[in-house]
Image (cartoon, rainbow, N blue to C red):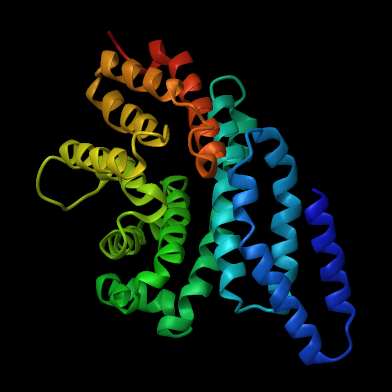
Length: 304
């Protein structure tokens, strides 16, 4: 928080500078620092502290983007930050509330959709310089061709744009316009996997564990494809990440009604030491929180 306050003071100073060139230089330098500071949150072990701090950080990023709207590092930080905040602290709460307070859960779902949309729009803006300002039109017209313009350097933006866009669609299942963008999401994620499958210790594979079971139009067994992504995610993370285990349990074991495997996977996720890989500490704490919640609902998820 002290670091954030110092950054805010620097932002205020930068915005007060009269000379446009000096002001832009100051904003860009502060933007570079903030864009590279995501590890501070990632290594924390207290989700509630991050939940309280994240809105300030996100609004600071947006304040800087208002001054430097094409700063690629800030656009990535915004796409990543709004996606993570929406999933970990808004959508998760909505899911937990659904059975006992549906009205409140629906309000939170709407809020999560707005955050995912904001994240997607920042991600698209970050990718647009590669292909031109009409990127959305290009993606919707011919997604597989449009993504060919991107290189390995674009993988972080490809991933977070695809993740936020996909999450938005998942919460908009009654919206035909949103569902029509499914091919775009698939193209973004498949291109990011093609360019750098090891990104963030196998994060793309982990995301695809949950996506393959619902992917349409691809030959073969979707559950087998999900398990292939799981195996690769485990290899790339060295078995030290809880998220692949939780994803397989939730996305494959529940539809297949494999209760024993479901429980075994979540118990394995809970045995992972979050301190083993500091840069994955918060992600592991959050995945383990979800694992506990899923285990608490096991009798509702399985018929037997």
